Amino acid sequence: MPDDLAAWLLRDPVLVAPDLLGAVLTHTSPEGAVSVRLTEVEAYRGHRDSEHPDPGSHSYNGRTPRNEVMWGPPGHLYVYFTYGMHFCANVVCGPAGSSSGCLLRAGEVVEGIDLARSRRPAAKRDADLARGPARLAQALAIGRGDNGAALDGGRFRLEPPSHRGAGVLSGPRVGVAGPGGSADYPWRFWLPGEPSVSAYRPAKPRPRPQA
DNA sequence: AATCTGATCGTCT
DNA sequence: GACGATCAGATTA
Image (cartoon, rainbow, N blue to C red):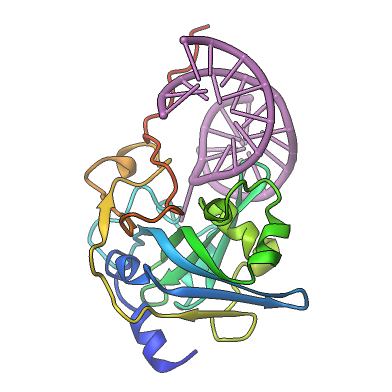
């Protein structure tokens, strides 16, 4: 990984996340290359970046087999499996040992659109190809085996945006239950007016039927 | 357009 | 054993 990219990702995730907007993530395989321009991300702060760890983070309760790579060096993918069927991808950031990351929630496919379409047959419009974290992962063919993969320009390349942080909006994170989902953690960042930004859903869980 | 439900299994208690 | 950093399709209106 280039030194400037490493230094860029070495900071607190709440600073890195808005800067990731407009960055381009490319995955290359024998099938071809697909590139996504990031339009929506969320910051998940780990333990060494702050006095108070982030209750919404997968690393909040300490090191486990699943969150292991979050504790490693920045510039790698943390890929997790959820709901029994979906993968989602984070960019690990902050210094090694800090367990921070930025969840890649949405993006615009800017290269390899036909390949992305073939991977996402359910998408009705091109804006839906990488709209949502699991959809973005699917468009880029990110799966279990990509957990820990380096963003070093090999299979995965991350290209920082030319203009950082301009006109970025922020708000509460999507689907995070408990205090981490409250307005006290406005760590979801997105670009205004982008059709690929996923619809907001309240963090409050639906009341379950009474027995 | 908003709301609901089923799918489906790894992870941690 | 309960619950996900979710998605797609159906249903309601």
